[in-house]
Length: 181
Image 1 (tube, rainbow, N blue to C red):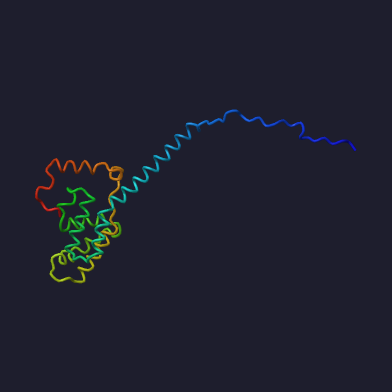
Image 2: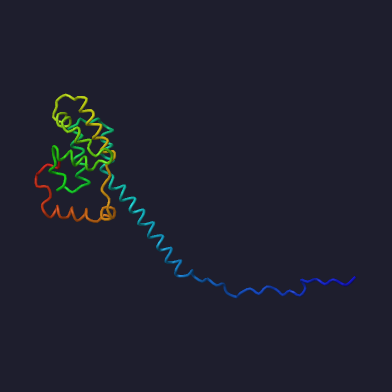
């Protein structure tokens, strides 16, 4: 039988590099990392801002949970909430049919619910004794508060515009002794 030789005898030792290469990733990976970090930061900021913009609505719902409101108190609460989301010039002077039309236009579910209950709303608002129609109006008002969301735009979501509006109001003297509601 022929003599077998060990094939591993002819192998040489592994030559290790004297220095290790520590090359940085390509510039594209750096740009992608920066883009991902910026996108996540903007997304988190927008989510926080949306949560912050919903603060008046959350406070109104908390007030409704703590104490049942009459229709007059609910109407004042709804007006304050509308003033926190919409420009003062658009909301502050509204009353009667114009106020109910505004509530209809900002309602997401039933676009004519407030106008349909206009007579009941007006009677219950100034009535000394609560009635069934007043309870129906209160439920409709509470539903409006629950479904109301701030009007979103890039300016409102990222904090532009609101600061300018407040600055203009302070420059013009703010509220000159008038009522907020």
